[in-house]
Amino acid sequence: MPVSSPPVTPPSPASAALSKQQARPKLPSLPDFSGRAFLNSCTLYLHLAPEQFTCNKEKIFWTLVFFKDGRAVKWSENLFCQEADTGIFPIQSWVDFEQQFQSQFFPVNAEVDAINTLEGSSYYQGNRTVDDYLDSFLILASDARYMDPQTLVVKFRPDLRHPRLHHPEEYP
Image 1 (tube, one colour):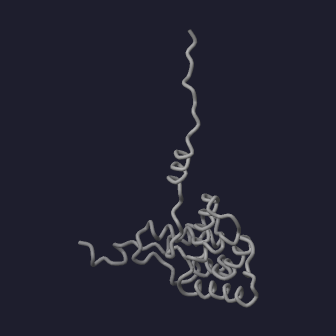
Image 2 (cartoon, rainbow, N blue to C red):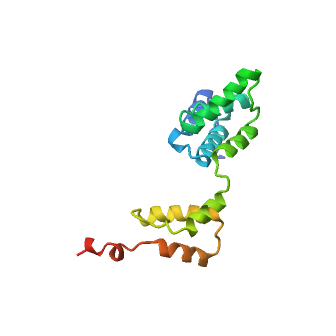
Image 3 (cartoon, rainbow, N blue to C red):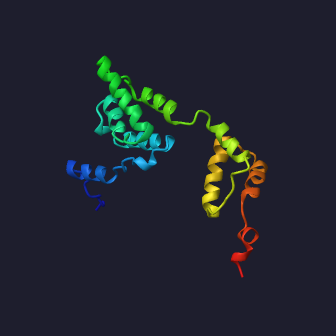
């Protein structure tokens, strides 16, 4: 007698909706408003929950909800003032929003900024843990496009403090 496998039943709409809700990404938070990190969080959310947005304007307005402080709120207010004056919201597509956001909130030249930081005399480990310093250093090195391992070692080591050398009075 042949062995048959049990019939496969498709998931019910309720269980499919439940599994989709469980995979729901976390909303971006205002402390993430560092330009690139904030935009990445929003873009990721838009990709993971596309059914929540029916058009570009909804995506843009949803993102602007998070603009509550500093330059971000001023930029958002300016967009709505332009809409009030012309009757048309000044940004019509998500691509345009990303470009305008980048021009407003990304560094003008991240590579030059990173190089200046790494080449300057004020960048060092300080009171950070080695792990925190390494994370920060690797981000700067990437932004500076330092790829050569020897260059990385030369830039990393002088800025790494050794607790016994810098504060010998703290150790018995």
